[in-house]
Length: 495
Ligand SMILES: Nc1ncnc2c1ncn2[C@@H]1O[C@H](COP(=O)(O)OP(=O)(O)OP(=O)(O)O)[C@@H](O)[C@H]1O
Image 1 (tube, rainbow, N blue to C red):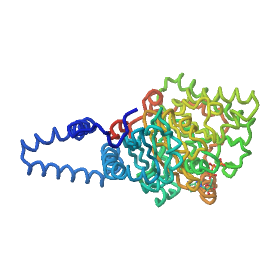
Image 2: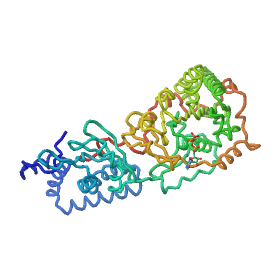
Image 3: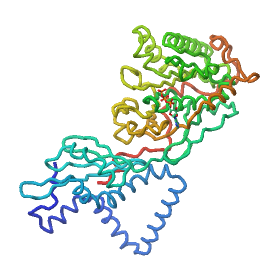
Image 4: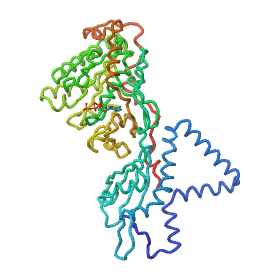
């Protein structure tokens, strides 16, 4: 561990300057580049250039805050806050919180602030402990540290021997942000499946899932009361006109006795309220899509758009544990096999799966790697975050275990191909909104034959015009770039 002494007895001015230069390579490098540039072009031209750069940055920030934050904002904020907030107050606050020790010569030792990382919501301080300290010394005064830095909350992570990270929540974007529930749409355009509106993200942008290309299967984890219901009902509301038109068929497995989705029974092509029926529904789902695969294959059709003839088959399982953990061994075994098969084989023929669980453990979701999109609402344990979102995602700022109880619907969303998760909140779907949804989809004169006997589509003749989306391509494609966090870890850290 490095020497953390504040005053070193043998220090000379030359050594102190040398040490400072070594410790601040970026400042030294910047000065080394800027000084000759200023000498070359003159200070007036340098000032004008700097002013233009500031103006361009400010305009970018006003016009597109998320991309500014992704490419520049986090870097600048980390640098600024390290210098103006953390570094300046470091010694004072550590002494006030009794977090200093001393060595045999009586020199005061303080933990060293190694670097700062900043996201839109969290600042992370990477700290080397002083000699004689243990992580619990810091852990015991986290509230005092949070208050001292005017943060909403603080938490601690042990990174290695003598190394910790303290995460400080600076803001809560959803405190004041209204998340209106979108009115029920009328349009039955298939493109709507690429823009399934659900709520807002931490930057205040509308947030939507893309069931056509990016969010082909979605895993949703959240403790009881975290708001999984709102997400799922919100999704159903968003695709309501397409359900009514028979372009989306919903296969609902609600094994907790139908308590959550019983109210929407009439919307669903198939509905299961217990584990035995749930397995039957999944069997039927796989046989329908198997048959569709064969029909499309025989016709040489590699491309199909969801339509009334080949609907998007949306299977929703509300509490996965009831089918994969807390059930008989026979049901569990067959369900897991069929679900894994469905997750791997039916994207190309219009199969989509959304599964929700309270515990994203390996026992409950052994196939979690097969979901390209994962959403972690408030979870009970820190370890659940990485279990749901992927290894190391929590360390990058997805603190789903820190989402407060009073913020249901808030979640971290992680898509394959992205490093970091996005903080989002779904709009709240109340009972009246559910009733309105059911009314829209089932009212006389609007109901399409969505509950026609299964097998019709498997044997349906191919029709001209429904062959224009290349599902095979979707299967193979990497998820597309989307406009939020993707910064290099090192980029946002200021040494
Ligand atoms: N997006 C939201 N915005 C505001 N409040 C919400 C939101 N979602 C849910 N709530 C509130 O939280 C309560 C619990 O939500 P919900 O029933 O959806 O949780 P859940 O995760 O499905 O829980 P369980 O697993 O026990 O069914 C709701 O009754 C509602 O009051």
